[in-house]
Image (tube, rainbow, N blue to C red):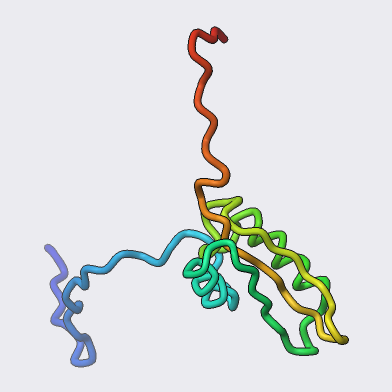
Length: 114
C-alpha cells in the first residue's frame, strides 16, 4: 500500500521558472564598476582612491587579479594593466583597459609539425 499524504497547510506550490542568465563566472568584486568605466575609455589610466582601511597589500593583490583576469569584470586576462601605488599617503589602484586584442591567441605556424 502506498502512503499518500495530503500537503501540509503551510506548503506552497513551487514558483514558476524565471528565465535569466546566471551571473558571470569568476569572482565579483568591489572593482567591477571601476573596471566597467575604464572599458569605456580604452588606453586611459584611471585612479581609484581607496579608504585608509584598505591595505596596500590588498590593492597589490587586486591589481594582480585584474591583470590576470581573475575578477569577472577584468576578463579576458591581459585586457587590463593595473598596479597599486601610494599617493599623498593614500594607497590607490591605477588601471587602464588595453583591450582583449592586445593579447591575441597565437596562431599555429603554417607547415609546422609537432
